[in-house]
Image (tube, rainbow, N blue to C red):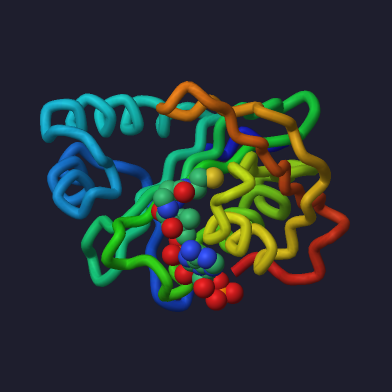
Length: 174
Ligand SMILES: CC(C)(COP(=O)(O)OP(=O)(O)OC[C@H]1O[C@@H](n2cnc3c(N)ncnc32)[C@H](O)[C@@H]1OP(=O)(O)O)[C@@H](O)C(=O)NCCC(=O)NCCS
């Protein structure tokens, strides 16, 4: 895997770029970061610092210059060539295909440009929107981890592991 870190990615409608301190206000106001402004500033400061590192991946999704969501690559294993993705988008921007577009671009970036071999996502079984984002990007449900994520009510959710490997890709990097 190449140590290329977080570089900007342009898609048809979106620009994905490194986080910057001024994103905190827009992300908290849009509820992409569901926290207080103070917590949001700390969270963004951490992202800004991590995005400097060669094997850390933090993108802010922008639409017409405004921050509306995030995609991160975490649990990165340069040796094994894999990365896990996490993502969210502000509630008022959901259901318009934006995350499908952003995650598709990040998958191609990771597999083709950073030369990872595998990208995966862990999704609560009931999170149909997130499962659709994975499926629409050619990720396969490879298995279910039983009761893997805790819920706030004290129970546990099963988690679907979606994955895609480089040889699954037939498309070019944008
Ligand atoms: C999951 C999330 C990122 C999806 O983002 P998005 O931009 O709305 O996704 P898209 O518009 O690209 O696609 C959403 C798909 O889910 C479907 N969908 C959304 N809500 C749904 C529901 N309640 N039941 C069934 N399908 C649903 C949409 O119809 C669409 O599928 P389609 O194109 O086949 O019709 C967004 O809902 C979000 O930020 N959720 C909170 C954080 C989160 O769950 N992150 C993922 C953790 S693994």
